[in-house]
Length: 133
Image 1 (spheres, rainbow, N blue to C red):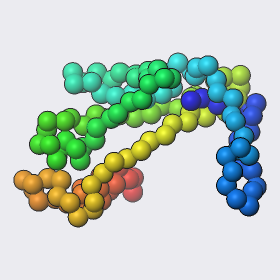
Image 2 (image 1 turned 135 degrees about the horizontal axis):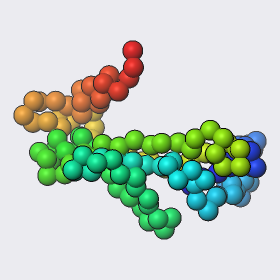
Image 3 (image 1 turned 180 degrees about the horizontal axis):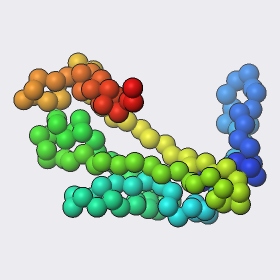
Image 4 (image 1 turned 30 degrees about the horizontal axis):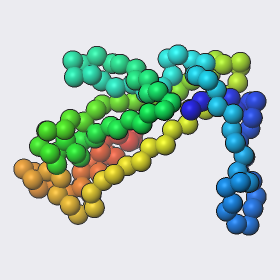
């Protein structure tokens, strides 16, 4: 979902109780003004491929924890997201909105039986690997 934030500035209304009818509706663009923006994955052959998920569809992506738990029966999908380039799209600030939901085991559950690694240990290792120092 792409929104031009210069045409409609997102704001959270001040209310004393949550009531969805008071939440503003953001006008969604028909498509991204930058065709290079969006989700990219690495295919099994090693190619980087842009993924275009239709509006009326949902996508599932497997991660490394599931790959370890299933001993490789499910494969993790290396991926990244490229934002809209500055100045593209009517000179505005284009926001890409997605909803990611992570399903994961409890921290103490073993995800790698061969190396006896819990999900908590695995997750700390991933964060450490992906955090710049």
